[in-house]
Amino acid sequence: MISTFAGIDGTTLAYRRIGVGDPLVCLPGGPMRDSAYLGDLGNLGAHRTLVILDPRGTGRSEAPADVSTYRCDRMVDDVEALRGHLGLDRLDLLGHSAGANLALRYLTRHPDRVGRLARPVGRDGTGASGGRGWSAQRRGGKGLQL
Image 1 (cartoon, helix red, strand yellow):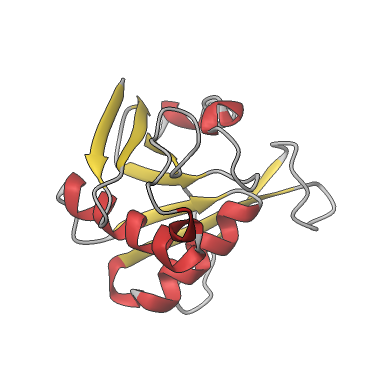
Image 2: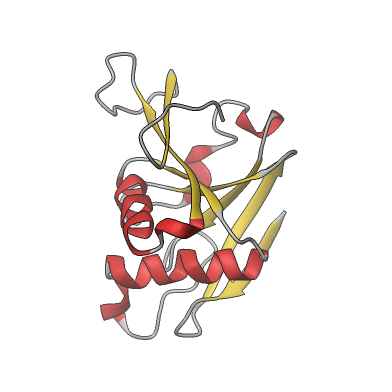
């Protein structure tokens, strides 16, 4: 299901929901790549409700009127606007590729609003994509299951 919300500057941003369970906000890589490539993240939607954001100017989200708002700090604002739109006190975040950078920036700015942070890793643990494994950390560095 595709839904929309307003970014801090009024840009209409889109996200889709897949699955059942507690929400997991997913930030795609690229950079500037339509989130459709994530699919259902290897059937992760069987365990969590995936909230997959199309960042500004990608997928079904509008391009902003001011191109200078493609900056990471503004995209962090978009994640915060999504959190508010969803009515969540805290987010569990999954960042893939460049989306991991955005997730870490969100964590740095809003540490009290992140429950869990995950990023896909390859078999060799390098962060390579391929959907073969998951690395997850809770604030404080302890591992967890998604």
